[in-house]
Length: 427
Image (cartoon, rainbow, N blue to C red; front, side, top):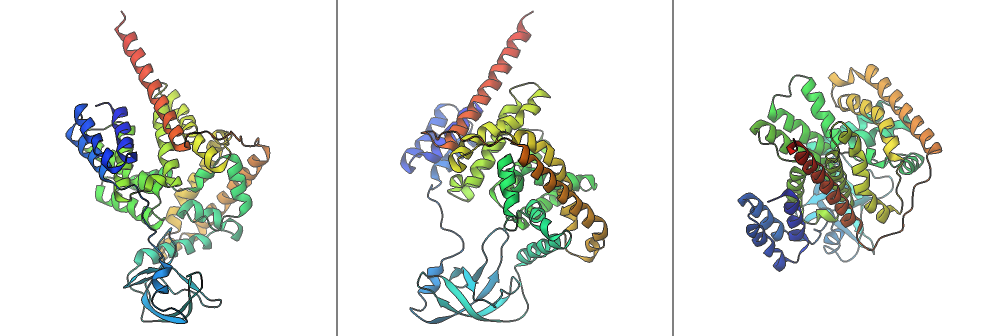
């Protein structure tokens, strides 16, 4: 079965109602798909499409323990990377705020909390007592330690951009910087994705340890978890794993097929993921890169690949943000070298421990100088860049239009290859 049909059937199985979705695997059998493809289609048809409830939360779980007044809570304080902190109790996870002057304890601390429940159901801690030293939650503390290290290495006005590029923590990026990057169309550089995973693997392989497959996988997933395990990062890590398996078994599959497998795995693990904007932009961008790279022969195809990513994500950006910035195709190659230096140096510099702290006199000035240059160049580009385009909204969903763009690029690739085969047959 052709890979384009496989992707189309997978989408049909995901989007169809549960009863109708079960007909899609039968269609796969009729089209003589392999048993593995039919099994994947069956998994898609069985995936529920409702968005799961948030992991944290349930502020009403605490509210029903007492109708009024203060309540007593017991649990372990958690600060998972990329998620809202919460109190882990026997009854569930409770999003907990703190009154002024009361600060949260280190992650993993067992707490006895006195809290009050507001009229809107918010739970606010008024006092807390820690029971012993922090235990467990090592990932939470590791992520907090690396974030603190990133702040120690650069000047105050550059801490936000460094933390965003290294750990995906964008809450401290100044508004003028986010506005400039949005005008340039390079906000995607602040979202940790395949570029970061590729750099981690490249540095590991340069160290001479890249042949240890388990060590590489452990390193990649440790970075993904500490950086918040967002959809783009997980997609990149799974894609790298699929590619590594293909290289070891000498059975490399086409890029779009690997991307489709990763999408199905992530959707089965987290039903409703395809509704998330970050996941949609991530998969559309990579699909556009892969599809556009095949339209022309190398190396021209590689030069065209960024245009494919832009065209695939432009309809969704126009629908969501109301604007599209084509200038990003020119600004991205200018800013990427600075981002690469920050990633290469920072991913080592922010590791906690005396061994890495000894390198601060070297890594600190490099990070600080590069971050300053990055912000200076991006601010200058924002002043000279033309205003973003504001296309009118379409009747179709932006994600669906983006998929149509990818399909068109794939069709162009097949036309080129067919023409080339026919030309080769002509004497």
